[in-house]
Length: 285
Image (cartoon, rainbow, N blue to C red):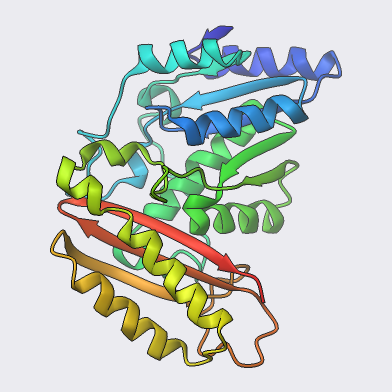
């Protein structure tokens, strides 16, 4: 395994892989790797001749007062995990390498970046889309692997790739969960012991909503009201940003399950203590 820190070296490695006719996959991460990341690495290894992971805590996707400075970091641990998983290359650039002093160019995905998490985290998806496109341009992977836990991010990246004719294939991978259902996330380490024991309520409430839809309840507002009551009754949930029913392709809000031609995305973001957790599930109709 080779560790790479500069864009020029990363481009040289990619050019060599391309000249050899080898397919290669990219797993973009912000580090502090867990089983969810490992599942993406495994998917890449099955599909591609070589696998590259990037580790970069992207400053421009964090807003004022968010957790950029305290976001969990352990580069040596990440490198050891990557080595164990037989990753071929790890790209670990510094911020000054990714963003030059007078960086002025950003990628905006209209409409989709203003709902759900985008409503509460201004410019978050502008930062995500910008860094992801930069990684695509630097590395030029054949395939890129994203987890479905960050469903809005995944949908926005797919839209960007389609709209801007980016020559890469996006592979979506199932959310990896703890035994009690909690979606694996680097931010889970922020949870206290009691908060962690209560964190699965988010996914359980989403499952309750799915069950109500599949039972035949078409009134999504009524289901939402019941779900908010369930969440608000838990003393560890300090704030609910949203609990939405949306079209999984457009992220448009679904007003009713009656006669829907599309599957329905159930997505929510809540604060358990001071930790913001997100989760989702697509209901297949």
